[in-house]
Amino acid sequence: MAEKDEKWPENISGKFYVDEQCIDCDLCRETAPDFFSRNDDGGYSFVHKQPQSEEDTALCIEALDGCPVEAIGEDGD
Image 1 (cartoon, rainbow, N blue to C red):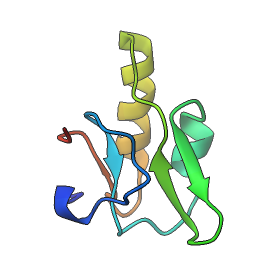
Image 2 (image 1 turned 90 degrees about the horizontal axis):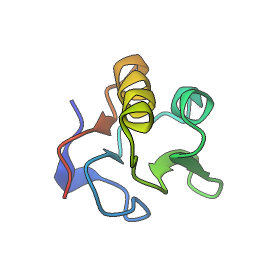
Image 3 (image 1 turned 135 degrees about the vertical axis):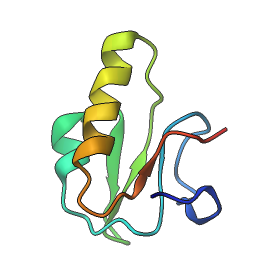
């Protein structure tokens, strides 16, 4: 389970975020590329845009559910 106090600083404020457990597997960026980006220097993903519609949210949830290390959270601010 992702931890709010361990989320990457690049995450845009909002419900979804990626924390320090990220292993750079690329699943979230493939599933929801409009919302997840990669920090090339650090080798991890972060949320660069929050979903606005139900369809967008469904993609982010799909990425969250598929994350092999549970690094995506949906309880951010």
